Amino acid sequence: MTNSTDSGNREARVSQVGAPPVVVAMVVHQPCPWLEEVVASLASQDYPNLQTLFFLTGAASSPTASSPNTENDIIRDTLPRAVIRQVEGNPGYGPLMNEVSRLVEGESGIFCFMHDDVALDSNAISSMIEEMFRSNAGVVGPKIVMWDDISILQSVGLGADRIGDINSNIEEGEKDQEQHDAVRDVFLIPSACMLVRADLFREIGGFSPDIPLFGEDLEFCWRTHLSGARVLVAPTARVRHRKEMDATRSVATMSALEARHRVRTV
Image (spheres, rainbow, N blue to C red):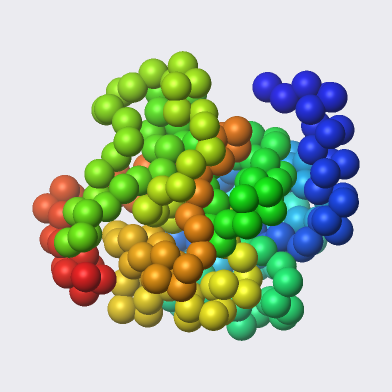
């Protein structure tokens, strides 16, 4: 938990650079019983210049027995100024996130791309922004912990070899004892929560339209490195992740897509 002094110092540092606008973009692709908690975490952010943009796919547009309120209702109740776009079918995470550069004007802002099963600590956005400016980074990601147990690490950035095989910097089930809390360069940031400079995103053409999911982050971060921009993890920013996308698809399907997209990326 962040104390009031730390929060005040962070806000002062952010204000010195003019608090550039941040647009949080999220794809809601299925009825989400946990969406209220996700949206509430966005509403609790201490960053002073935050806008939100939601893409609701066809599967997430009507109430169900487990989720009687529509996703549109849940978002409007907590974030009344949010921009919501209904989408026919499900074009995929990468292609929908590319729409952000068309819908949002200006080159000086920052995009934060998120999955619909990620909840942020209240200082997550401001911490990543602060590190982006301090380290002159193009892409910054948070420390990701398990949804139901914040003491278990899920990701602190990822590595990859020359043929695109991804490797983690942590062991499965590893406890968070602040052993990975140093800011450092990494090869890629998971697309579950990724902060990107808007000018960089437009310069390198956004996510690959040929990779709707499972590998879009590897391909995007690889091109980020080729452009000369830095990719960092800022562990002072912490988020919880349910990994619902993995739970709704078979291991064989995910492995096949990841392998196909890895070959395409290389």
